[in-house]
Amino acid sequence: MVEFTGAKDQKNGIEWAQIKYKGTMAWAANSALEDFTDRFPDREVVIQHPTPEEDDAPQYMFLPGENGIKNNMCGQLCAAFITCMDIESFMVEWKAKAAVYYKLAVAGNTDMGTGIDSIQSMFRVAPYSAEPGDLILFGPALIDPVTRRTIASAGKMQKMLETHYLIAGVRIKSTDKFTGRLSGGGTGHWVVVDKITTNGKNDGCQGWVEIYNPFPNKRQEYAFDEFMTSFAGQLGVWVKRKSLG
Image 1 (cartoon, rainbow, N blue to C red):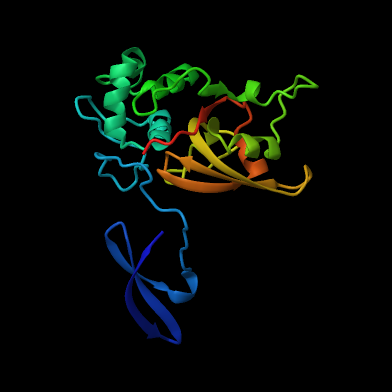
Image 2 (image 1 turned 135 degrees about the horizontal axis):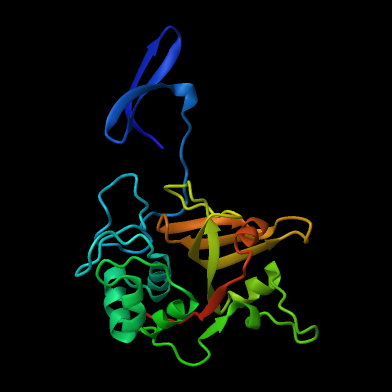
């Protein structure tokens, strides 16, 4: 992605535009450039101390009192997104409520990913203060009462999202440095599913899924079948929506 400076030129019948990329100025043929449109804002969760490197994902950060860059903060950012907290305030509260999980993840030089038990511990923080029944594992919440099987259809998930968020364990492309695009394989990662818009039958895409992705720290949208390919293990937890204002 490049930034247009506003300067234009024309030589040999070709229109040129001056662009800036990573602090370097250059000229590119105007015909090669396209307008960039993004309806989702950047910096969905406030991260006070991101790394200064332009090539680092927005998810990468420093934490006060701990050592080194923390690269594996997707679970914590998902919880901060749901609880409407900045990441450092959330981490202070999480350390106070679930010190064992905090230590395993980020204390000192540690930089480790988080499992489902750790994710559940994050909602002990105030103001969320989870009560029994607020958190439900993905599969059990979608068990059909007749077949006694989990039915993870777009419609059933859409209905569940009316009252809950879904923190879903997905895969993202290991070679993608910026967007953390969902993939059928790659690095394990946590995202928050906020909305599903159903469309079509099972032989189509079945709809659209809007998520919060901590890797770029912003919302993204995927076709339902694209999301489900990434969510192949169906490891996740439903988190009851609460008014936290």
